[in-house]
Image (cartoon, rainbow, N blue to C red; front, side, top):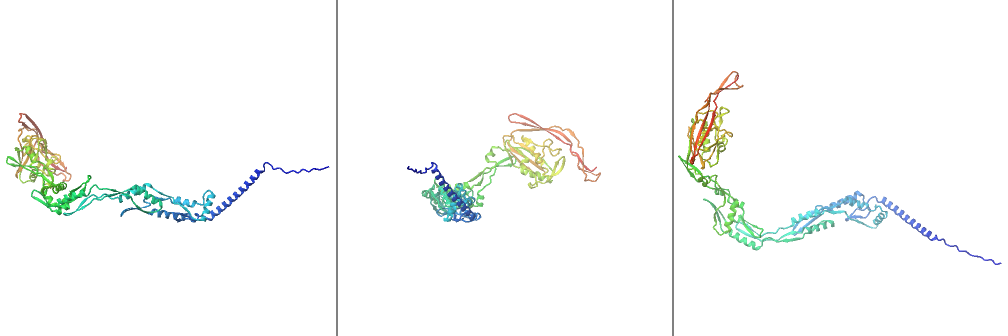
Length: 590
């Protein structure tokens, strides 16, 4: 019996190919892990071997490779200083304006630049870090410095440079050396394009150093031209052709052609012309103080001169003071005009306090009133009476004005010529500088009283003094006791004073305008003097001393002034006065 044999070939499992791929993947992973481990190990080794910066690193040509962080910082700091000190020069022709890069706002961030250097080879990605290490074996690694430029600082520098480098247009003008004249022709100016300069400066800074920048300029035309120069040259030549004489009254000063040339200058105006001018200060210096003083004149008011009972007007005159601006303008007109070369110098006219026309309008033509009081001769008080009379003499009071004796004379002092004299102070007769002037006040009061003028303010003496008319007298004490008279007439007033060794007279001149009458009423309320005692602890105990004997009794009195006006109006004024009894005063120590 035959026997058959059957062969069987093993069949592959459907899962066989994925197993091969997985095996391949595992092999690749093993290789990669191995490479990573090798790289990591290499990186770790390199990092331990290279504690500083990677070798071969340069910044702006500075070798900072293979160095410690401190050494790197020092080198970058020097780089920052060198670049900050770099000089930038803006140039126009021969003109220059300099500045350092630091002035223009350049700065290098040292900290960040150092961090960038030290970071290379230490990145978080080990492959990138390893690549830096491997690159360090092959050659240099060039890193930039971290720099910045402040735009506003560059703009400010560009503006300053523009101001320094710009050239103003030169206007046409003349140069004078005495009578010799030189024409100077106009020349264009140049302005700097600050925008272009700013761009160029920024580019130079970022390029890493200093340098020269040739600025871009724009030409600006002057307002004047050669024809304008020719015109003013003709005027100037005419101006210095002949001398000029300035005069006033009998005084004169002649300016030679050289003098004139040294006074002249030119000025270009906004409308494009060149004007000739005379320099005021130079004219003043050329004339000199003596000549100017001779030209000047003080104003003189119109005066009234008394001649007996009549009064005459003495004319005054205007004053003149030198004014260099007016004189310079006048001289220029003479130099450039066609008239003569001799002229009365111009200046400022000064009006007198009382002009001739005003004086005539016051209508002061006659003596209106007069009054005289008498005194003993040769006392010190007489000196004061005469002195105040001299000060008040010829005082003019216009219609409506009020005359104050204190205001006109001021404080009576030794510097003004007053001396010690008798006066009443707090009820006692005392010695006082200016004492005795109350007699002048009384005399003036009565002159005004009988002229019909208004007595605005006055004060009688505390005690009756027999040399004065009772109820019609006045005292003075600076500054609170005054005599004020108002000119309520339609005409002016002049107070005229005169004196002898034993009398003082005050007269009022003007024009009679009212008829004046007066009556003095009886004395009433009569009171006899009493004795007053004053204690003085400096006196011996029980002693006493009479310092003032009893004087006149006290009383009341009323004075009436009657005013009859041309229109028929009659006015009565009553003036009441109360005099105190003058006591006997005894000083003692009880």
